[in-house]
Length: 218
Length: 232
Image (tube, rainbow over all chains, first blue to last red; front, side, top):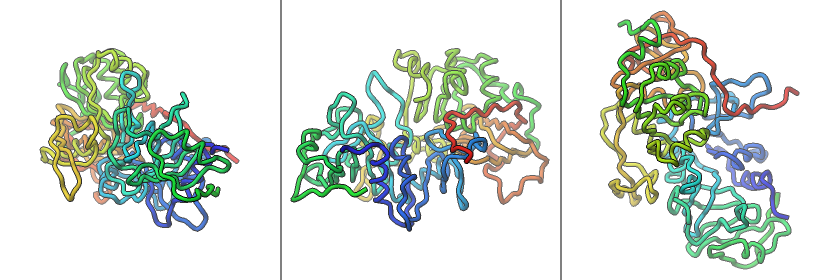
């Protein structure tokens, strides 16, 4: 069975390491916060200006002056801090944030990412994504393996305008966990019950397969 | 120094057609609501607006877009506004989309007397087109130039007559850098307090960056994405 969005988030949460500062993008990445493994302490940064972001507020306590980068109402945990946008991106560009998780429309086998624009159709802007991908040491992309038309989102090269070049390290999709290596997308894990053949068929870019590919453990 | 003005009309005096404005806020959080309403009322047109977002269809900068008062937007993300997208795709509105961190730093640089800086953000993308590329520590960077504005309009939680400002929560966002980068900076505050009431240790924006300050009123503080957990 292919993973659902919650399970993709759950798998990505296994990558978290104690003491990390983490920036989660909008969509599936936001869900990662729900699956922090036991014994692991991380702090979430949202680029609009908070470190120590907590869960959504209890109904009736929401505060218009306290939102995340997705404009959702949030809470602040004890020890949280607010700051301006220049300071926020100093944290990001200065590589003080250890992990960035974000969504994508396309990823290339050399680690290029496209997630901000479909020419002539959708122009929402890049927000903080270009700063995040240009600087983060560790970038995980969370996305579905194929788009709504059933076409692969893992390509030889991106067809959409790029967000960043050669920056993606790891990809977790509904079908697989993959790593960007010299020869392309290295298959690390399969979703439970999904075959290597199915992943091959859903991947346009070069897939590197070495030995037995284990199933993900969730 | 007393920088207090009586009302929003006085605060916005001198804003004219064709000017470049900076407006603080992230989404609808920390936007200068009173001043935006005044700009609608004044009906100034041909504006270049530097703001992270463009509001929503019926609030924030969306109100100026509806009346076609904006000629050009310089923003990082404009996804919540259908009228914006329509005007942009039809070519009525000029749009310069720039990475959020570069936008923040360009405003900061403008206020800090730094004409330009190199950043890795946007290298290899259309953002880099026509910009100087230079390698530092083996990594390519692009040259981004400072931004300034005829008027910067910011919103703070508290302020005093000296122009000192304190922001609340994530409503701080772009406001401090934009305050630095305005030739004239207007601050509207929820609470105008007596001189001495703000703890100098805890002021976010020093008054030197602010030329006019006034007590705002009737803040709607609209929430874009109300996300909550159930009570039990």
